[in-house]
Image (tube, rainbow, N blue to C red; front, top):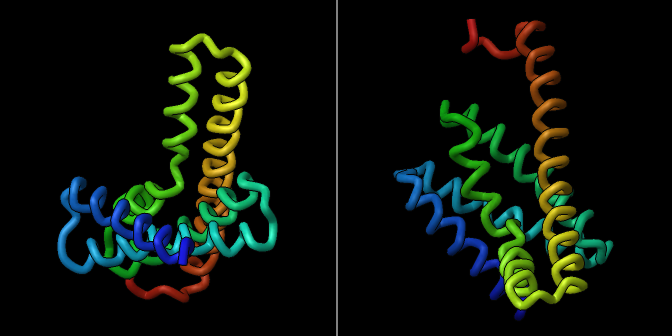
Length: 152
């Protein structure tokens, strides 16, 4: 039951940010679905490996693949789908706790929370960057072989 609530909250968060970014129509639905899928992968990986950085990396890889595919299908920039879908993964609570520890001069807490937030953000960035680079290389090879006729 808790996982279902988390998935619905992730979906609502992605929907809110997609609407805030003025995404409309079918693109709004697919951008929202990306948040649902991303958090679903996070929860699935968490059951196999409790390391939050591995969960963030795997979720980011899946989100980036999803965003790259949706961007090509809808002839839209990748960021339209990627940013909205990645919103549930952003370590907002950890960032809040980092600032709360800083303001109360709790240096051990500040160090712990800021380290977590930075490492989690780095794991997301690594997943997005790695997947984007590999996807672009594969896509370019695919186009050069004549597999995608619309680019000509």
